[in-house]
Length: 156
Image (cartoon, rainbow, N blue to C red):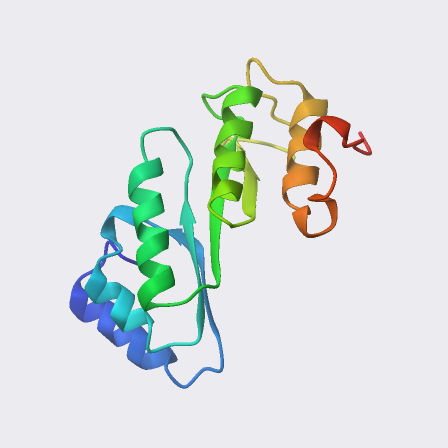
């Protein structure tokens, strides 16, 4: 959405203003989340989601989160792509960084475009069990956050 023209973004916001709630669930690009966009989205009752898929984006994502908290909403989510050009330790560090910002991350397991079955791809350096454990734990922090990750026993 944020890659569109400002006129298009204004039209989208005008079109959804009457909705009781709007969920921007596609993972907004943090570097395009400006004060003007924050104020525009602040006219809506909404949830905003950003993405922290790789290292190097954490500063801009944190700045977008802080801006969103100040001017738009405190209902914020962060997607974290896991199992794509990373390691389990790397992915977990990004997930924990999001937690340190006071948010619950949403792990998104990488799926190749040519995948025949969902969640069958296992990236180099990962195991199917580790992918399942990480997605199971971090996608259900509302219930599991009192359990340290190391002590969490996955169904896997």
